[in-house]
Image (cartoon, rainbow, N blue to C red):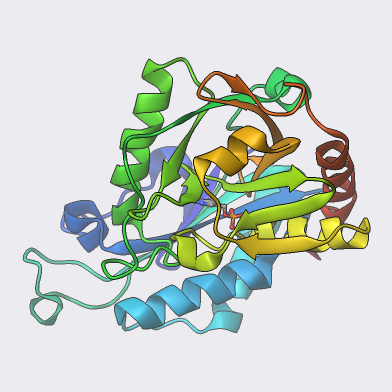
Length: 290
Ligand SMILES: Cc1ncc(COP(=O)(O)O)c(C=O)c1O
């Protein structure tokens, strides 16, 4: 599979693609990104990812020169040029190029990149047996700073610290709380709990990235006849849950079987989790063809 990059209008192999060193995301983390999956030569949830990106562009005040439809066509065209069936698209938009924090002193033409690659976050066995998770000592960035719903490159240094902490403790993932002590999310995925057949996930105001896979999983759980609640959850809710699973574009749907060494339910992937995973695999067939 050729790993292609579309960068500011030109297509090139991944190995030769370079961005200016004074790119504002390179200097300050001042950029946005989306990770999007390709299943069966179709782009999954493309419009939802683009909508989130354009909300981030508006929030951060970027002077974006490409419209939604134009960027959408570019993505589909690069996928087709890569001739890829299964893969991962990394879409980046940065504020522009120049030294110094102040946006008014830089060239504010966004650098736009579409990278066609592959990505697997967890081992195939983890999807069978489930992830062991720890509670991280790093809290999510509060919404009165950079709003967590914005998928800003700079905010990920915090998630990487949490991920490293999880690695140090031999965990598959790290769960971050918010400053009130409520459960927010893992480093690259949203959390779901199942208790007495009810599917519960942290409310968007808990300080989460409002995941597109999270929206999909909520709908799939409803389709399977479950009540779904967005609510405020504490670590005790996780410990006492019958089942837990994580969702994300890169992670897909993966069971979570323990937190801080305490088994969740029986310590094996639960029935509702397995049903949501099954429905998710079917749902991935409904992407945008290229
Ligand atoms: C911090 C964080 N939470 C949740 C998610 C899941 O979001 P999505 O399902 O849109 O990929 C991601 C994915 O990138 C993430 O980085």
